[in-house]
Length: 459
Image (cartoon, rainbow, N blue to C red; front, top):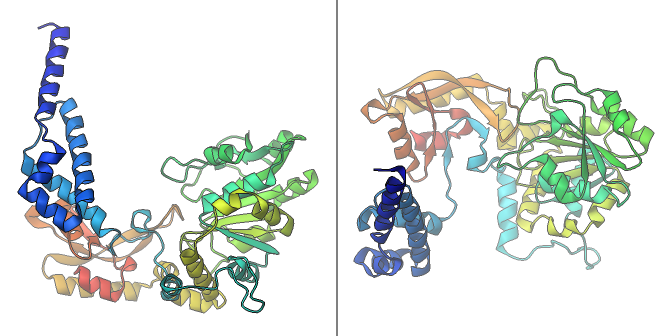
């Protein structure tokens, strides 16, 4: 058979397979389809069937055989159930403190309570209670940020990418659009979302400075022109360049920026407000970035700060005012539930000891050996002979502290004949689901990212 004949035969087989794929209406009229529509709603089941059948047709194009109607319905029902049940609470037993897939930072209790209170009824979101006049929704959070960091001005938006976008868009002008960035700081923050893309969206023109591993002060000086709007320093939160390297610190960049009469914007990403000796951390603190001469500092609310998703911006009044006045500020503003949680989280930082005690992210990062050992042993006792205590290393996660190894005692479960993947699948099917991690044939349940109650449920 010639290659052309083989290709034609394959196309005929694929077309024949597609013809055997059942229709949406036929499956909806079947007894399982009727029951599913009663349980999840007809519109949800119809869409789930459409999506499932589209996947099956794609599989048929690649040579697969259509499954029988029962398998099709089972796949569609799984999709309908996931949509109908929405976000679900899970137990994070991975040891990854800021697990992006699991929602990053768990909120402090007071922050969750504040968000719930804001959701239940009306709130003084944009009303000045003293005068009764219209106010600005972010005033309280911004006042707290200024008090905690020593900054002269602050701005709160809905995430850190938005804060950086707004800083770029607000500080460039038609005559000055060039932004100087070291090649070693052109980060990708996940989901193929890259710094050059943010800059392009803002209207700024990227000017790469230095090389990937070595950038010097003179590289910035040589790149300055009359069209330069700012110098941007970006902390590479999710990677480190090691070996034959050199980078320019914020104080040196601030001096260059002042000489050129342009601002220095420093994105510290997941940085803490200030450095705590108890917290293992090589990220730049916000207070350090300001002290280093940055005119604007941007960072995330839901990473090492331990609050909800938010973009926080602090710095000099003129630069913050220009960002606030940009039309994008309205599109990027924070919602009332997240704002309530931001305010409550920031209030905890007025007392550093309270923050270490009440902010779950900080509490997990500083968890001691004795606490973790006791929790791991309690889990082993509940599980029985299939489990034992061993040592393993967790991570900060969330694109933070990539070199940090959070080593400590864990509960390791022998999956037996089922295998570690099957045991992990069974745990994910629990209510609430338990998400662990595989390690050398064992399923590891890390007590660092669980409370005592969650550890008992997981076991």
